[in-house]
Length: 331
Ligand SMILES: [Zn+2]
Image (tube, rainbow, N blue to C red; front, side, top):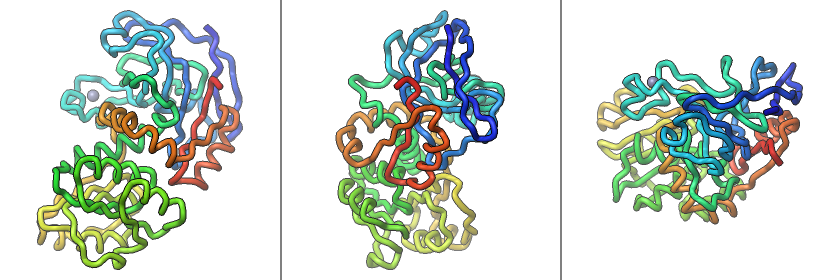
């Protein structure tokens, strides 16, 4: 079949018509429905292959054994991760496959990406059937939801009765706040130095208190901190607010903080990091499904066609936290 693929030459998008081969063993073809842009909108100016990572699509063709291996059928709506994994290394077999030593990614190296009408999903793909009926826009929040699930439940080992401080109230912070409240954490407080009306509205929807700095709430202490800002000024104060044996999870790689090792040691605080969650997809899909109505009222979804990529990237850069920017190849 013929496919329409996006290419970038000097930052200018071009559509090209290319042949798409039949899926081989453990491969399948997706019709791409939603391609969420990461908030950082990092697309290279020139690409030898079609760019684009994780996407939502509809299964249109299956190669040999693909139905049983991936547990999908023709017509299913699925979330395709950007990971292509070996399935054999120590990380893959323990479920931490985002650290797979030989992982490849869609839209990188020589692997054709998902900014196209159709994508040939290769052996080693990670794919998740979405619950029906699925609000496709809401499921374009998978990346923020996966990070929230992994940071709070897996890395943070959240327990009933834990208390949570969220540093940086972006889409990740919003998802984490909802998830924390649904898991019985109380109180949940967020700190963000760049509060505006819309962040206040999201905090209200999530049912949490939002403050501009650590000094605005009176000496409350927490068993867990999720920090997506890595702001040096807030880091030290957040660490002061943590209870002995607490957990501090740094989300993403946003900046450099120097670690006050003496403080960490004195309280025996567990410090850990997460930058690309890829093992919380099933729980993240459940979370999105459960909160679909709330999320679709809270978040603005901005849609662009493939050739509008530069406009979409510019828009994404200006609207990091309250909007999800999506390319819709087949619209
Ligand atoms: Zn592996």
